[in-house]
Length: 80
Image 1 (spheres, rainbow, N blue to C red):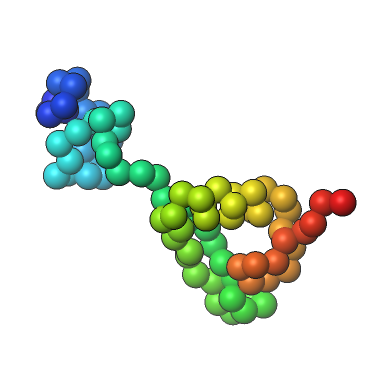
Image 2 (image 1 turned 135 degrees about the vertical axis):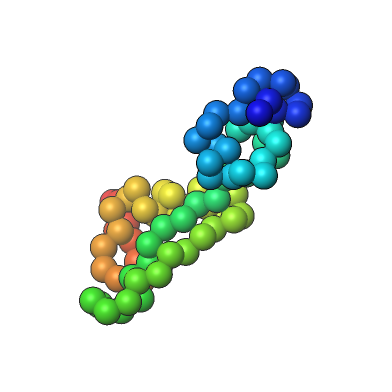
C-alpha cells in the first residue's frame, strides 16, 4: 500500500501494527507519546504512565535520564 500523501510504499511492519493507516511515518500527523513504568508500591504494583503533552514528556525524559532513585513517579536524583 502507498502513502496517500507522498505515494511512497508504507512499510509492512507499520501496516501490521496499524492496519488502517493510510500514511507513512514521515507524513503522519500523530505525535509520539512518552511511556514509562511507574512503581506505585515497593514491590507489589507497577503501571505504565503515558504522557501525551510534549513539554511534560521532555521534562519527564530529563528526570528519567538523571538517574531517579526510589519508587513513585516524582522521585529523582538532583545533580549538584
